[in-house]
Length: 433
Image 1 (cartoon, rainbow, N blue to C red):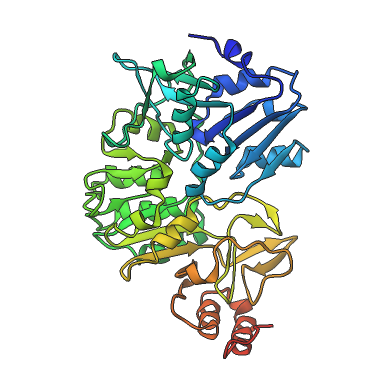
Image 2: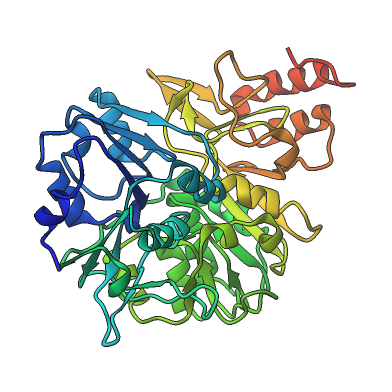
């Protein structure tokens, strides 16, 4: 047993440290690391920071992130030593294994009577490397067992979603609680997008939703509507998906992992965390299982719902950068777009408002072509349906000309003529410009 400060003292000034994604990060341990100022070359690997710490503002500390959130963007803008590694979520496991940090850490729930600590809100891509670090005498595994974190379950025997106190090289016991993710309040446009997206979901569908106001609104529409017999197979377990459970709309007769909602991490409100505590209706599995396209395709009537930032008439989607500047990350959207495109009955939805206002001027998010420096998140051949407040454009199997006309139909009226003209120019496989 050690204090957070004692555990932090075991990290060398020039060391390597592996973090789980957001809700798996140990808050007290990272806060204690942030109290030190003797770093020479500490290299930290992780994604989506979910705890507050001074660590990454310290000289000599370098963060390699696979997904930017508000903390990463603030650090980047403040000049911290942070860099981005493009990877979809299911590749995080192999990346951890390749990097092989000397120190791995995780938060977990308080141990039960037999010494087992549930890994709580995160299974993700770090599970394999956590266990490898536990078995390697030359490496260090730090586990923060926090009484404020919910006890969640996996699926025995293959995916136990827990670690024993004897496996930890350093065990910290705290009363820390997970960061709450404030819910985004949906506006009129969000509600219209959600209604258009919900039309693709029927009783018997299996759904995946990402983060944000639109997915939350979709879940609300489903919870309040005449829906039933839904399944949940989603990398992220959200408040919206909890609402579906509470409304009695979830049966989980998916054809795979029947009887439980499947996720690889959860982020949301305290209400969500309290609901998850001891709840065996949800199973947390490693990301290589949850985000495997071959596993995703085996779900009955899979519908994946994710957010986009911009789309061109080829159907290319930009979802994680703004003007070439990193905003978020690839995450699992690509995994679900791939998996949901392997069966005829499955659908993959990319949702976005039709416009954005910049410096008082209205711009279309649907454009004839992206400019130089644009970074594509989802390639055109994996895009199925684009949804805006004006409707849904079904792109799969259509020519570039047909795609352009479909997208013009759901664009803001001020930009439709420009998109129709670009679609005409693209006829026969020509350039839209």
